[in-house]
Image (cartoon, rainbow, N blue to C red; front, side, top):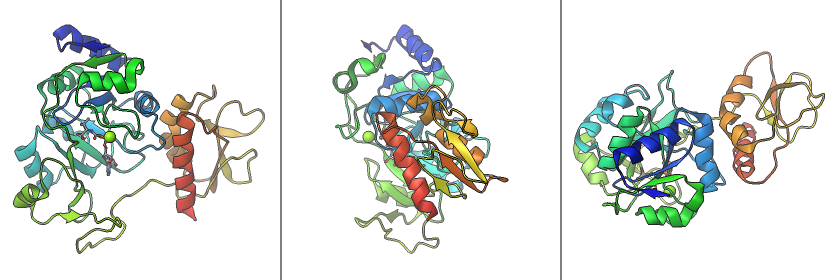
Length: 317
Ligand code: TXA
Ligand code: MG
């Protein structure tokens, strides 16, 4: 349902967000599909509604740079850029704080977090009133075109989204510029309306990603691009038994199998997605020498869960 950005509309959106639901949110770039970034289950709902086949990390939206202090390790560069470009279409990737309350699913299991402070007054009002960071990818079905009006969101996601706040047409119409400040050198991950040259005027040279995914920059630390989380222990998929030393991660009814943790006893894929990264981390410790994961169906969110598990298993080899 599309609703006007009245105080009642904003309150209703906050009520839905508290309940773990998704809400369509206008920003100056594109409309976002927002959920409480601190609730794993709410974040899983985003992937479900978008029908995303992979758990790409999401952008976390805050009301000001002050809130970012609780989430990420600040650097001088980040501070300068926030002062100049926030609120605005600039997303910064920074290292998560140790006690960062944002769902690991929202950052795709990475140790970094992409944060942005949108310039749209209604987005600002919603985030401020809600009082917690909101995870929000563009509010369209996976592979679809990013929505720049409330009607676009309605057309793409329809009744999957209980509430879409109408903030008119998006001024920018193009997703935010993403700058990675989590490594040794700043790297532009996604071009946007804030140009690399404008960033360089403040913080000096910025690396660009070339077509072959390498970085056009004298990078000190190779492999800095994406520190994907993979467990240190070998990961075995589609396990129907448990080998000595392994920690068995269950899904659905485990019968007599010695399951240590279960992604979802009810075989609920949304719940499993919400638990995935947390539980992989919890089992990646002594005395276990490996992690075995019970089969997960390749339907709905199960596709993204299997994608993530396969990558984590492959990285181990
Ligand atoms: O303009 C925007 O940024 C819109 C509006 C709604 O704010 N949001 C948006 O979110 O475009 P999304 O989820 O569609 O784009 C997220 C992008 C992905 O390409 C993802 O790979 C990257 O941000 N990203 C997120 N977290 C990251 C991280 N920790 N490290 C590297 N890249 C990250
Ligand atoms: Mg998108």
